[in-house]
Length: 235
Image (cartoon, rainbow, N blue to C red):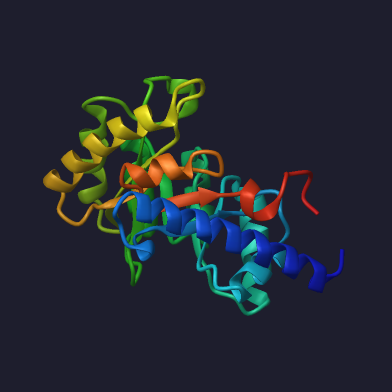
């Protein structure tokens, strides 16, 4: 496909996704600008990120450092400066590399990771925004914290010089009606904002369940397939 053809494809997909977000916001009684679209560009090339940036997409997300670090450099060389979100499970030995490009780390799920991020980010002009990943089903294999661990990790983030606690991230559990899961997340998000004023970001909802996420207060939705198409290998 030519660059012009791919741009047209992405533009049409983007229009549909933005319409879905606007309709979901209207149904929830929220203004359409209450929700930020984060494009999940894993497995897609830097050229797609550059095209999306040209179409007005400001936030992009990746989940594998090896892919993301190379892609971020190529996008920077292409003249675009999106806000990079890291959304995958993060090993502490990858922290320094991830912070070479990421503005937001959405998958903070342990005190040790929060402390490692804080040390690596110390002295930065702008702190790294950190979202604590919440487990909505208590399954440790899928990442995220549960119960009182949420507050221990949040305290570790707020105690770190190089980090700013921005809010929460969650994924709807497999096999559960998304609205039920996101209703629980809304309660947790309210508790978070009460304990930590300013920590109001709620990153939740993907291509298949963004409407439910917006209904229950998501401020950011992470969209891959509906925006970029079915994933294959990195093109």
